Length: 305
Image (cartoon, rainbow, N blue to C red; front, side):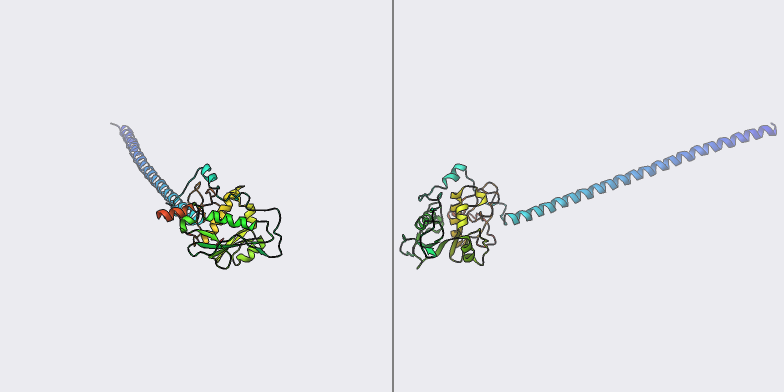
């Protein structure tokens, strides 16, 4: 074999070895690249899962925070009413029947067309009973500039308090109107200005009534106009106003609405808002507690309005 032939064969062999080496190197490179890409995908997937987990955890925290905030807000709004609060419901017919009392002057409110004809600041009823220690005795006076019949008001209050749906079911003692010499408490019907004066240091702002010590001061403005949540239902409002303030005399405190749509407890500040409850004028929750020992509501900070 000539030298030229040997060189040709050697050249071909070198080219073959070079090609084989390139193929092996390329395959290994691709395998490495595939492995690197797979690790990146795993890392990316792991990162995504971590992000997803973090996001889920954050959402849960937000829900808990929202729940806590909601609970706190609810507690403030409904005045710390417990979750298993007793709620009482009634049909509209039953609510309408609740306004029927023996002395049927709730609708008129014992109003008359002119002020009382006297130079005295106050007028007092003529028809009163003698003091009786076995009864709860109260007296009454009305500012003379008001257009109210004093004896009518006296009979109306007595009728409300001694109704079988009223406070007599809690006290188990009858209420009666006496003169002001001896009485457990006093009803005063006054103008907005005089109400603010008599209620001080309580803030009635010319629009609210109050109980101040052993005096119940009924704001004439409220008596003739009612409150927003009552609409035109002055009968229920007047029932509520009398029973609410006497409730304070009997040492019952303010409460909230037990559940939307339920009857409003009489010790709610319904003149301000019924908070989703239906306006109601009788101490039905207090009677339930007295007769069956059921704790029907929670006490609230009391400003006596």
